[in-house]
Image 1 (cartoon, rainbow, N blue to C red):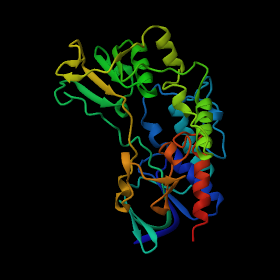
Image 2: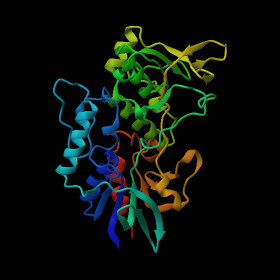
Image 3: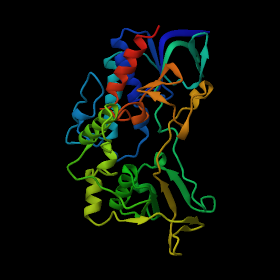
Image 4: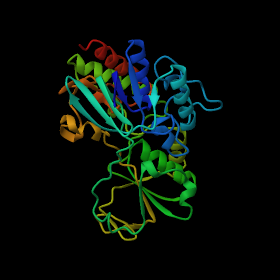
Length: 351
Protein backbone atom coordinates (compact mmCIF):
# COMPACT_ATOMS: atom_id res chain seq x y z
CA UNK A 1 0.00 0.00 0.00
CA UNK A 2 1.30 3.45 -0.96
CA UNK A 3 0.47 6.36 1.32
CA UNK A 4 0.17 9.93 0.07
CA UNK A 5 1.23 13.35 1.40
CA UNK A 6 1.82 16.79 0.00
CA UNK A 7 5.46 16.62 1.13
CA UNK A 8 7.80 13.90 2.33
CA UNK A 9 10.82 15.11 4.30
CA UNK A 10 13.66 12.59 4.35
CA UNK A 11 15.78 13.08 7.47
CA UNK A 12 14.74 13.95 11.02
CA UNK A 13 17.78 15.95 12.16
CA UNK A 14 17.97 19.71 12.49
CA UNK A 15 17.30 20.41 8.79
CA UNK A 16 14.32 18.06 8.65
CA UNK A 17 12.80 19.59 11.77
CA UNK A 18 13.26 23.14 10.45
CA UNK A 19 11.54 22.04 7.25
CA UNK A 20 8.69 20.57 9.27
CA UNK A 21 8.23 23.80 11.20
CA UNK A 22 7.82 25.85 8.01
CA UNK A 23 5.71 23.24 6.21
CA UNK A 24 3.31 23.40 9.17
CA UNK A 25 3.12 27.18 8.78
CA UNK A 26 2.19 26.67 5.12
CA UNK A 27 -0.64 24.31 6.15
CA UNK A 28 0.79 21.49 4.07
CA UNK A 29 0.21 17.80 4.73
CA UNK A 30 3.64 16.28 5.34
CA UNK A 31 5.57 13.52 7.02
CA UNK A 32 9.18 13.41 8.26
CA UNK A 33 10.95 10.09 7.78
CA UNK A 34 13.92 9.56 10.10
CA UNK A 35 16.27 6.59 9.79
CA UNK A 36 17.36 6.99 13.43
CA UNK A 37 15.51 5.18 16.21
CA UNK A 38 15.56 8.18 18.55
CA UNK A 39 15.45 12.00 18.11
CA UNK A 40 18.57 14.10 17.76
CA UNK A 41 19.92 13.34 14.30
CA UNK A 42 23.69 12.99 13.99
CA UNK A 43 24.26 14.89 17.24
CA UNK A 44 23.48 11.78 19.28
CA UNK A 45 26.50 10.04 17.72
CA UNK A 46 29.24 12.64 18.28
CA UNK A 47 32.20 12.51 20.65
CA UNK A 48 31.60 13.09 24.36
CA UNK A 49 33.30 16.48 24.73
CA UNK A 50 31.76 18.16 21.68
CA UNK A 51 30.35 21.63 22.31
CA UNK A 52 28.68 24.06 19.92
CA UNK A 53 30.55 27.12 18.67
CA UNK A 54 27.83 29.56 19.76
CA UNK A 55 25.70 30.25 22.83
CA UNK A 56 22.28 28.58 22.92
CA UNK A 57 20.40 31.68 21.78
CA UNK A 58 22.47 31.72 18.58
CA UNK A 59 22.16 27.97 17.95
CA UNK A 60 18.40 27.70 17.61
CA UNK A 61 15.93 26.37 15.08
CA UNK A 62 13.08 28.60 13.82
CA UNK A 63 10.33 29.44 16.27
CA UNK A 64 11.96 28.47 19.56
CA UNK A 65 15.20 29.72 21.08
CA UNK A 66 17.26 26.93 22.59
CA UNK A 67 17.18 27.15 26.41
CA UNK A 68 20.57 27.91 27.92
CA UNK A 69 22.46 25.01 29.46
CA UNK A 70 23.29 25.59 33.13
CA UNK A 71 26.94 26.55 33.71
CA UNK A 72 27.75 26.21 30.00
CA UNK A 73 28.19 29.16 27.64
CA UNK A 74 28.41 26.81 24.67
CA UNK A 75 25.90 23.90 24.92
CA UNK A 76 27.17 20.35 24.60
CA UNK A 77 25.82 17.71 22.23
CA UNK A 78 23.68 16.09 24.92
CA UNK A 79 21.87 19.37 25.56
CA UNK A 80 21.32 19.81 21.83
CA UNK A 81 19.84 16.32 21.46
CA UNK A 82 17.38 17.14 24.25
CA UNK A 83 16.48 20.40 22.51
CA UNK A 84 15.80 18.64 19.20
CA UNK A 85 13.63 16.03 20.91
CA UNK A 86 11.67 18.75 22.72
CA UNK A 87 11.37 20.72 19.46
CA UNK A 88 9.63 17.77 17.78
CA UNK A 89 7.12 17.58 20.61
CA UNK A 90 6.62 21.34 20.91
CA UNK A 91 5.48 21.62 17.29
CA UNK A 92 3.90 18.15 17.11
CA UNK A 93 5.94 17.29 14.04
CA UNK A 94 4.84 14.04 12.32
CA UNK A 95 8.16 12.18 12.53
CA UNK A 96 8.14 8.48 11.77
CA UNK A 97 11.13 6.40 12.87
CA UNK A 98 13.04 4.34 12.24
CA UNK A 99 12.26 4.57 8.52
CA UNK A 100 15.03 4.30 5.95
CA UNK A 101 14.39 5.92 2.55
CA UNK A 102 15.84 3.65 -0.12
CA UNK A 103 14.97 5.53 -3.30
CA UNK A 104 13.08 8.49 -4.75
CA UNK A 105 11.60 8.06 -8.22
CA UNK A 106 9.41 10.05 -10.60
CA UNK A 107 5.89 8.60 -10.75
CA UNK A 108 3.04 10.06 -12.83
CA UNK A 109 3.73 13.70 -12.06
CA UNK A 110 4.59 13.00 -8.42
CA UNK A 111 7.58 11.61 -6.56
CA UNK A 112 7.56 8.13 -5.09
CA UNK A 113 9.62 7.57 -1.94
CA UNK A 114 10.45 3.91 -1.39
CA UNK A 115 11.29 2.97 2.19
CA UNK A 116 11.79 -0.11 4.33
CA UNK A 117 8.40 0.65 5.91
CA UNK A 118 6.35 1.08 2.75
CA UNK A 119 6.14 3.68 0.01
CA UNK A 120 5.00 7.30 -0.02
CA UNK A 121 3.64 9.30 -2.96
CA UNK A 122 4.37 13.02 -2.64
CA UNK A 123 3.78 16.23 -4.52
CA UNK A 124 7.27 17.30 -3.37
CA UNK A 125 10.21 15.88 -1.44
CA UNK A 126 12.69 17.64 0.84
CA UNK A 127 15.92 15.70 1.22
CA UNK A 128 17.57 16.57 4.55
CA UNK A 129 19.84 13.58 5.21
CA UNK A 130 22.98 15.62 5.85
CA UNK A 131 26.54 14.32 5.55
CA UNK A 132 27.37 12.49 8.80
CA UNK A 133 26.38 9.14 7.33
CA UNK A 134 28.89 9.41 4.48
CA UNK A 135 32.38 9.95 5.96
CA UNK A 136 35.20 10.61 3.53
CA UNK A 137 38.56 8.82 3.71
CA UNK A 138 41.36 10.04 1.43
CA UNK A 139 43.34 7.67 -0.78
CA UNK A 140 46.61 7.83 1.16
CA UNK A 141 49.28 5.30 0.15
CA UNK A 142 49.79 2.46 2.61
CA UNK A 143 46.37 2.60 4.27
CA UNK A 144 45.89 -1.13 3.69
CA UNK A 145 49.38 -1.85 5.12
CA UNK A 146 48.87 -0.12 8.47
CA UNK A 147 48.62 -2.76 11.21
CA UNK A 148 46.92 -0.50 13.75
CA UNK A 149 43.39 0.79 14.05
CA UNK A 150 41.85 3.36 11.70
CA UNK A 151 38.66 5.27 12.39
CA UNK A 152 36.90 8.35 11.12
CA UNK A 153 35.59 11.30 13.13
CA UNK A 154 32.29 9.42 13.34
CA UNK A 155 33.91 6.65 15.39
CA UNK A 156 35.72 8.81 17.96
CA UNK A 157 34.22 9.15 21.46
CA UNK A 158 36.69 9.91 24.27
CA UNK A 159 40.43 10.02 25.16
CA UNK A 160 40.16 7.14 27.64
CA UNK A 161 39.55 4.79 24.70
CA UNK A 162 43.19 5.42 23.68
CA UNK A 163 45.02 5.19 26.99
CA UNK A 164 48.61 4.08 26.43
CA UNK A 165 48.32 4.41 22.65
CA UNK A 166 50.11 6.62 20.15
CA UNK A 167 47.43 8.37 18.10
CA UNK A 168 47.72 10.28 14.83
CA UNK A 169 44.90 12.74 14.08
CA UNK A 170 44.62 13.78 10.43
CA UNK A 171 42.80 16.99 9.54
CA UNK A 172 43.11 20.75 9.96
CA UNK A 173 39.44 21.66 10.32
CA UNK A 174 37.31 22.06 13.41
CA UNK A 175 36.82 18.33 14.00
CA UNK A 176 40.54 17.61 13.66
CA UNK A 177 41.49 20.42 16.03
CA UNK A 178 38.83 19.54 18.60
CA UNK A 179 39.65 15.83 18.66
CA UNK A 180 43.39 16.54 18.76
CA UNK A 181 42.83 18.93 21.67
CA UNK A 182 40.62 16.39 23.44
CA UNK A 183 43.31 13.71 23.17
CA UNK A 184 46.15 16.05 24.12
CA UNK A 185 44.35 17.35 27.19
CA UNK A 186 43.50 13.75 28.05
CA UNK A 187 47.19 12.83 28.22
CA UNK A 188 47.28 10.73 25.04
CA UNK A 189 50.50 10.58 22.99
CA UNK A 190 49.36 12.70 20.02
CA UNK A 191 50.66 13.51 16.56
CA UNK A 192 48.44 16.02 14.72
CA UNK A 193 48.98 16.33 10.98
CA UNK A 194 47.37 18.85 8.61
CA UNK A 195 47.49 19.47 4.87
CA UNK A 196 48.51 23.08 5.49
CA UNK A 197 49.43 25.04 8.63
CA UNK A 198 46.30 25.33 10.80
CA UNK A 199 44.46 28.65 10.58
CA UNK A 200 42.87 29.54 13.91
CA UNK A 201 40.16 32.16 13.93
CA UNK A 202 40.54 35.02 16.39
CA UNK A 203 39.63 33.91 19.90
CA UNK A 204 36.58 36.20 20.06
CA UNK A 205 34.98 34.75 16.91
CA UNK A 206 32.30 32.10 17.33
CA UNK A 207 29.37 30.75 15.35
CA UNK A 208 27.54 34.08 15.33
CA UNK A 209 30.31 35.74 13.32
CA UNK A 210 30.60 32.71 11.03
CA UNK A 211 26.90 32.84 10.20
CA UNK A 212 27.13 36.58 9.48
CA UNK A 213 30.13 36.01 7.20
CA UNK A 214 28.40 33.22 5.28
CA UNK A 215 25.25 35.31 4.87
CA UNK A 216 27.20 38.37 3.69
CA UNK A 217 29.05 36.26 1.11
CA UNK A 218 25.83 34.82 -0.29
CA UNK A 219 24.26 38.27 -0.47
CA UNK A 220 27.30 39.65 -2.31
CA UNK A 221 27.28 36.81 -4.83
CA UNK A 222 23.53 37.12 -5.40
CA UNK A 223 23.93 40.85 -6.07
CA UNK A 224 26.89 40.39 -8.41
CA UNK A 225 29.38 42.03 -6.07
CA UNK A 226 32.92 40.88 -5.25
CA UNK A 227 33.16 37.58 -3.39
CA UNK A 228 33.85 38.38 0.27
CA UNK A 229 35.40 34.97 0.87
CA UNK A 230 32.87 34.14 3.57
CA UNK A 231 33.92 31.94 6.45
CA UNK A 232 37.04 30.74 4.59
CA UNK A 233 38.44 34.27 4.68
CA UNK A 234 38.45 34.21 8.50
CA UNK A 235 40.22 30.89 9.07
CA UNK A 236 39.48 27.17 9.40
CA UNK A 237 39.35 26.50 13.15
CA UNK A 238 37.15 28.12 15.77
CA UNK A 239 39.19 28.61 18.93
CA UNK A 240 36.67 26.88 21.19
CA UNK A 241 37.75 26.83 24.85
CA UNK A 242 39.36 23.32 24.81
CA UNK A 243 41.16 24.07 21.54
CA UNK A 244 42.40 27.37 22.94
CA UNK A 245 43.58 25.66 26.14
CA UNK A 246 45.50 22.97 24.28
CA UNK A 247 46.99 25.49 21.85
CA UNK A 248 48.08 27.92 24.54
CA UNK A 249 49.57 25.07 26.59
CA UNK A 250 51.75 24.07 23.66
CA UNK A 251 49.94 20.74 23.25
CA UNK A 252 48.43 21.46 19.85
CA UNK A 253 51.29 21.65 17.38
CA UNK A 254 50.58 20.48 13.86
CA UNK A 255 52.96 18.51 11.66
CA UNK A 256 52.74 18.55 7.85
CA UNK A 257 50.76 15.81 6.15
CA UNK A 258 52.71 12.55 5.90
CA UNK A 259 53.41 10.85 2.57
CA UNK A 260 52.22 7.35 3.45
CA UNK A 261 51.21 4.91 6.14
CA UNK A 262 53.52 2.03 7.00
CA UNK A 263 52.83 -1.06 9.09
CA UNK A 264 53.67 0.58 12.42
CA UNK A 265 52.97 4.27 11.80
CA UNK A 266 53.40 7.12 9.34
CA UNK A 267 56.27 8.29 7.13
CA UNK A 268 56.99 11.71 5.65
CA UNK A 269 58.56 12.38 2.25
CA UNK A 270 61.96 13.16 3.82
CA UNK A 271 62.13 9.65 5.27
CA UNK A 272 61.34 10.57 8.87
CA UNK A 273 58.61 8.56 10.58
CA UNK A 274 56.46 8.38 13.69
CA UNK A 275 54.99 5.29 15.34
CA UNK A 276 51.21 4.98 15.67
CA UNK A 277 48.70 2.56 17.14
CA UNK A 278 45.64 4.42 15.84
CA UNK A 279 44.90 6.91 13.06
CA UNK A 280 41.82 9.13 13.38
CA UNK A 281 40.78 10.52 9.99
CA UNK A 282 39.10 13.90 10.51
CA UNK A 283 38.83 14.36 6.78
CA UNK A 284 35.28 15.47 6.27
CA UNK A 285 32.14 14.13 4.69
CA UNK A 286 30.21 13.94 1.45
CA UNK A 287 26.45 14.53 1.04
CA UNK A 288 24.38 11.41 1.74
CA UNK A 289 22.34 11.36 -1.46
CA UNK A 290 22.24 7.72 -2.58
CA UNK A 291 18.44 7.65 -2.20
CA UNK A 292 18.19 10.26 -4.96
CA UNK A 293 20.23 8.26 -7.50
CA UNK A 294 17.16 7.12 -9.52
CA UNK A 295 16.46 10.77 -10.40
CA UNK A 296 19.76 11.06 -12.28
CA UNK A 297 20.63 14.51 -10.93
CA UNK A 298 24.14 14.09 -9.53
CA UNK A 299 26.75 16.39 -11.00
CA UNK A 300 30.35 17.28 -10.20
CA UNK A 301 31.75 16.36 -6.77
CA UNK A 302 28.63 14.33 -6.06
CA UNK A 303 26.44 17.40 -5.66
CA UNK A 304 23.11 18.16 -7.30
CA UNK A 305 22.73 21.48 -9.10
CA UNK A 306 20.38 23.72 -7.15
CA UNK A 307 18.69 27.08 -7.41
CA UNK A 308 18.46 27.96 -3.75
CA UNK A 309 17.20 24.69 -2.28
CA UNK A 310 15.34 23.54 -5.41
CA UNK A 311 16.99 20.92 -7.61
CA UNK A 312 17.50 22.43 -11.05
CA UNK A 313 16.66 19.16 -12.81
CA UNK A 314 13.63 18.31 -10.66
CA UNK A 315 11.51 21.23 -9.35
CA UNK A 316 9.58 18.95 -6.97
CA UNK A 317 12.78 18.15 -5.07
CA UNK A 318 14.44 20.45 -2.52
CA UNK A 319 17.74 19.80 -0.77
CA UNK A 320 18.30 21.25 2.67
CA UNK A 321 21.18 21.37 5.11
CA UNK A 322 24.06 20.00 3.03
CA UNK A 323 26.13 23.20 2.92
CA UNK A 324 26.20 26.61 1.32
CA UNK A 325 25.18 25.13 -2.05
CA UNK A 326 21.74 24.48 -0.54
CA UNK A 327 21.49 27.82 1.30
CA UNK A 328 23.91 30.08 3.20
CA UNK A 329 25.06 28.30 6.37
CA UNK A 330 22.25 25.76 5.87
CA UNK A 331 24.30 23.02 7.57
CA UNK A 332 24.12 24.98 10.85
CA UNK A 333 21.36 25.27 13.42
CA UNK A 334 21.01 29.03 13.10
CA UNK A 335 21.41 29.02 9.33
CA UNK A 336 18.95 26.31 8.28
CA UNK A 337 15.80 28.27 9.15
CA UNK A 338 15.80 30.65 6.21
CA UNK A 339 16.36 28.09 3.42
CA UNK A 340 13.80 25.81 5.12
CA UNK A 341 11.29 28.66 4.97
CA UNK A 342 12.10 29.31 1.32
CA UNK A 343 11.69 25.63 0.42
CA UNK A 344 8.31 25.41 2.18
CA UNK A 345 7.05 28.54 0.42
CA UNK A 346 8.19 27.27 -2.99
CA UNK A 347 6.48 23.91 -2.41
CA UNK A 348 3.25 25.65 -1.37
CA UNK A 349 3.23 27.37 -4.76
CA UNK A 350 3.66 24.16 -6.76
CA UNK A 351 0.79 23.22 -8.99
